[in-house]
Length: 167
Image (tube, rainbow, N blue to C red; front, side, top):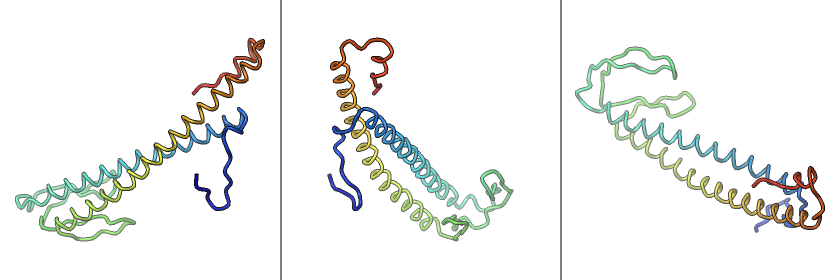
């Protein structure tokens, strides 16, 4: 395993049960955070795909002088009229808007979709590695708990049940 600068490598088999439980909890929290990030990226990607569809829909020449609702915020729309269907105004981030042709706008949103797809693939690999780490950790934890139970066969009741760990 590659060692990052300033970090040391610890063999998880050398950790005791409580330390393994703490590491498992930390890994599960990281996994939860990464999974949430994956879902948010997927949602953003779907929004950009919807933008591509919207741009294509607006590009039809029959839409000239058509009444539309213009979004000012996520919840505020004003009535408007589509005067020039050859161009659209797109949000390029941080409150900046740019006038583009349909092809330029489609290319812009397609690049965003591709960029997010690349990040989704990297994130998916990271999530898979974290899941594997949790699985290995749970196996070692179960082995240690079982070894402790086997070492104390006379332990019954509350003490014995506290040694069991859910995977």
